Image (cartoon, rainbow, N blue to C red; front, side):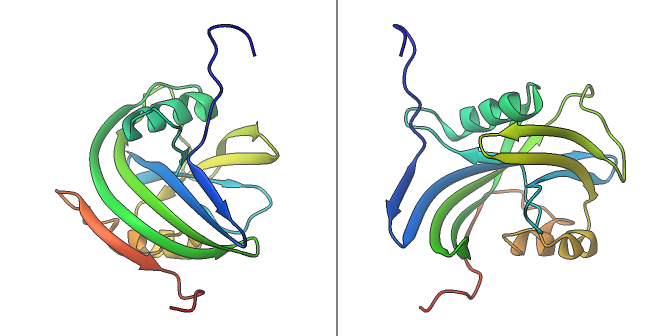
Length: 172
């Protein structure tokens, strides 16, 4: 590691077979659509973002992730949800703390109502981004976890809401 560069440290705890994550995601809207992304090997979509790093604020995480993945500068808006998210993924039980923000995307980000607008290699994953109708029906059809967001997408909270979400795959 060269002098002046710090080693990046994502906030994640492996407690096999479980894992803890601190994930930050942004909801960016345009013309009645919301930006979503997925790894191409997965059947489901999600809202763009990623794991926070030690020493950065959650807003900085969104800014960094959007620059890394889309090459754009975003304006982070109000927090919508703080989520204690419990789910099963890739043969592991996850306990995730998720912060979901509104974000303003620049007009330079391409828009098309049906086509993939951006692709990139992110580590081992090939990611693709597209716009999805910001409706309960459209997000439900796309299988976007955490699933409560589809229920609230047409009436976003004006103040942050704390949600405890369990996808039902864990024994509690």
